[in-house]
Amino acid sequence: MSERFNEILDEATMLLDLDAARAEVWVSGLVAEWVDTDDLLAQLGASDRPEALAIARALQAFVPDAADAAAALSSAGVAEPEWGAMVGSAVALLAWEIVDPFSGNSSLVVEFEHGDAIRHSMLVELEDDCAVDINFGPPGLVEDAFAESDTRSLSVHEWPADRALSAIGAAMARTAADPEVPVTDDYVMNAAIAMARVGLHGFGDAEVLARAIPVTEARSPVSGRPARDPLDAEADAAACSTLRSALARELARPAPEAAVAEAAARVRKSLEAATDPDLFALADDIALGDTSRVGDHELLAGLAGAFVVPGELMAFAAAERDALRGLEWADWLGAVIPLVRAGAGADASPMQLVQNINRCPEVTTTVPKRDAPVVADVFSRMLHAWELTGAIDDDGRLTPLGAWLVPRSLLCAWGGGGSG
Image 1 (cartoon, rainbow, N blue to C red):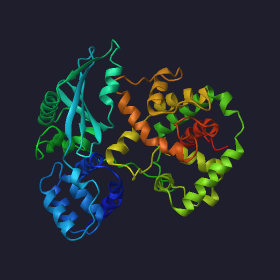
Image 2: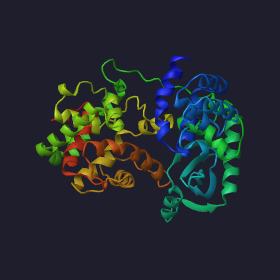
Image 3: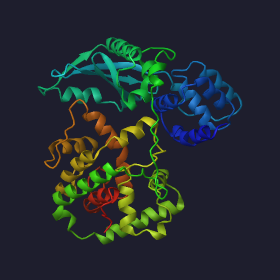
Image 4: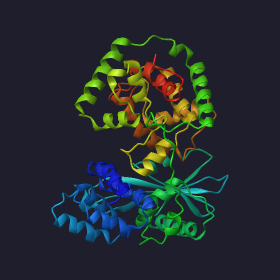
């Protein structure tokens, strides 16, 4: 077995805790990297780890030969994933078209349900009748699009699900036929499962999959975070300046030391006991190291800002990693500045953070209404960093500690201090 394959098995540990829908999306990202599925199945078959069987089961959604590999592993006594029987059971229930009348481009949203009644949505963005971006997310994208369809800048229409699937299949075929069509990383990662969703069998879209360019970021020898490009460093400094100016009054307030000490003690205890895998993954991602050498302020700010400048993100599927890394300086500033200004008790829900971006006077970035559910889904994946550090409560609202901590976590991530 190759070293990379063993790394993949380690990353696939998270599959055991997912459902069939998310497992299928995860392995779609895997085959974008490992296009030779025959080789992949051979290596899976030689393993006795439950992660290997989980990958093989999820692959059944779009690689027919994976069923034999999975059956062999199961017969050998390898533990089955709880969701294994649900793979490939997705049924399309609802569909909508979202049209931008100015550009003429559109997106198609399809909501699916697996046999275990768990739903998810697929959003495919079209440009000039070619598919250029594919995202998967929680259910409700269709309803969100409908709720926001009163805007004059978008036109939202309900479609029969089979019509939407047919249109997506045709658009993906046009993309595959033209290597000049620019596609996103998410398209490459999600193409295989999207083809399965629209009923395309095999890897007729292999040309597009092969166009995936691995993103190999330079790594700092000290930290798990990506080494900062000089242009990124300039943007970091500008973002810190904007944040300090916008929240000068809030940043001047003293730290709630009792709350800081309590939260830090809880985090240290959990890390020492290794009882919280999410917290452990965050600490590993920022290369936290020996917590006894890190002050309470630095500890909490580093963990709360773990997704601002993400590291390896090995606890996430490839598509999720790309989405989290896609949040830019203006997104964070726009989400956080209004939140902190509103103070303790402010709504920190994913959709509210998106609305904050569009209403923040310090940034010019706006999130188009059709993209809002997707961006909200990305924010939802990072909120556990705020939950684990006590920045938000169980109701998703900013705590007094969070009002002090969240802006400092951005400053810390961007190299502007913030731990004091």
